[in-house]
Image 1: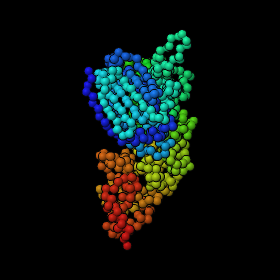
Image 2: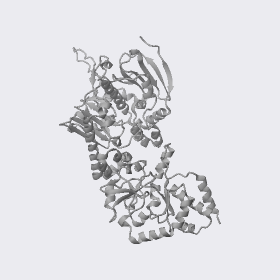
Image 3: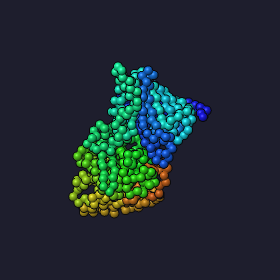
Length: 637
């Protein structure tokens, strides 16, 4: 019995309207991709039903043969894509089509340039999905019913893609989803049998679900019976990863990546392996060319699909790839796991641990080979995914050295491009250039490359020609707390703890520094008294040559710029006081030694400390007091 129809008109999310307009114009030259996207969605829906049906056979409703059908009507100017997959209920339609659920939407729109060619690439990275239908259609009608619900719980969604859509309850006898595209006048080429078949073979041949179209028999010869039209499978409908590598063309690998990775671009590379013996499984892993927009989202999608004996089990199986390699896309198909495996079982499964370990090894092997054989390609990869790879030393202790070898940084070494936008310095190349007697790898962290390059902590290193790595990503401070050494060399921050240059410091310099510190005892004590409650200690500096002062932290403390960012994000930070290091030979400090006016001396002490805090990326507790002191100092006679 039919339920009372419930119809409503709803507004699109603002981002959807923007995306539709942009996509129609930017992807107009490659209109045929709409069919690839709709078939890909239909295939996913069939995969999901196959998985849910493992525990509830009733969901198949007596029709276990999963398929995707493509039809057209030249007179009505329509193309229809239907599947008998999992389908959607009313709320799922609103969630999946009325809004863009995919995270990273804001970053996506902020990245748009207005240049159609560049924006088309960005749209490809974001993933066009269902909305690609509006490239060729001026109206789209979607009718769906979730498997397991009664016929009267069908839902019809319809829109012209101009800001709103209608939603109504309809009777739908069969489960699944049907999408009808009412073609624009300039897209009638797609209401042709040959055109649709050629697109299916080009983009969807690798999909394991059969994609079917009605046959169009030749007219019968005189005296023969006419052949009845029937559904026939257009694609090869075999799991691409299960085929021998020698039988798969590069174009087939690339098209499968676009299906499994929901990407518009070709992959950077792929790794196809069949493992036999104690464990039996096949993996087909891809490295993308460009980072997806949700790469740093906390509810990020992982890119590995898990199959068991060609049966889809789950999307985004995070147990199969660590978080620092979450950009890897692909499938793993096991012959050993049970078909009813759950996410909970995967967390404590030795077979999964073995597959994960082997997959990580293959990806790291491929990256090492790329870094060695094609520096330009590796640099391109690093620019997209380097920040994520930096999470590796903390997450994967067993592969820490291998990951460290792949890291790239900016450096003070002008000969290898300190001024370029790319971080190109690896730890191996740094060690090769180390000074004789140098036992440590020196680095400084900052919230920008400009701030790192102008850090006062670098002054003695520049004077001595010692290379320092410039770490400017937010993840760096966290990374170096786990990556404390490489190849037996300690990684040391030039801005933390006492400076010990070891054999790089000659005896004369050491003696001169000690004498300067002794001569400055009085002023250091006076400054410590004035700055009581703001600093832990005031001491003479061995690292400054040009600046009057700098802030130094204890070796275990977090950099000032990171403390500021965390405070701004609402995190409570443990209270700790920095150390103020003063350059005894600087003219300002020399002048302060003879200052008898205690108020003026106090103002200069606070100014030096506040300047040092700002240079370090810290935050002033009382900016107005700093401004007043500077103004008073500038106007003093």
